[in-house]
Length: 318
Image (cartoon, rainbow, N blue to C red; front, side):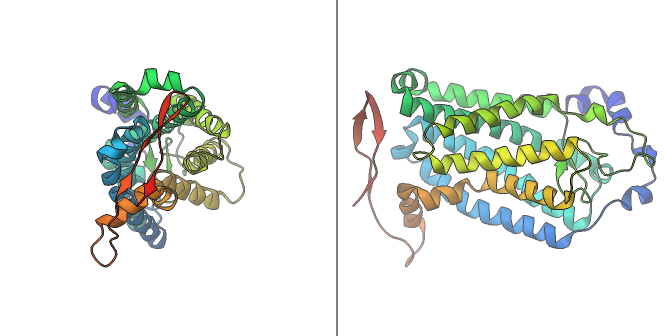
């Protein structure tokens, strides 16, 4: 974005639309209406489940705990990401897209910000949970009261930095998945492009966050298997993306791109489903929001119990 706004000549040189005619660009825009429809349906399902969970998490009984504060703002970023990685992706696949044909939409799309911010948020959540369970006194000193908001602000600051200074991702429907290199699908003889300028080194460093959150959850996988599942989805999709972007001779390339795309969609939008299935308190609170006869009127009590000097929440259903 910074290059698009302030270094327009350099941007025009890297993203040169005059290399081919409009008709020639269009020949590379494969229409995939079935895949696009599936992406939109997946996004709609994820948001339908996720948004009520965020509403419930915002209630004082949950929001007073630092982990739920992080989960709430991470959920907002995930829902924003779903708008692009599911709905906009579906639209591009239905109409058939090449980056050059939708250059403004792709450049202004904040998928890079959502990806980097979401990775930071997942790593932050894993760090918070590790401290809570293993170093409760440290967790109390750095996360209690309003200190959690400083970490959350850092997460959004990281996302904003990625939006302005990182290479924008683009979607060519022939390639299936978003990529930093907008010319990844074009043969070298058709477009003499220097692809190295589109390598995202920030994304390489970002994988340290993805690896750290998985390693953090390994220490208490049984206690936090649910949260680890979402992080593993992000890690695997990021690893597959890295392989596909750097290695051309990978078999079943289209299948791998599809797997990467859907893992990313479920990794960002599947948080609501995970909460509904595995968190009893949130599941019952969400059910109480439904109209009759689906609603079940309950009271969820979270009495404080001291564990190694740290207050933890035990949910009881009455």
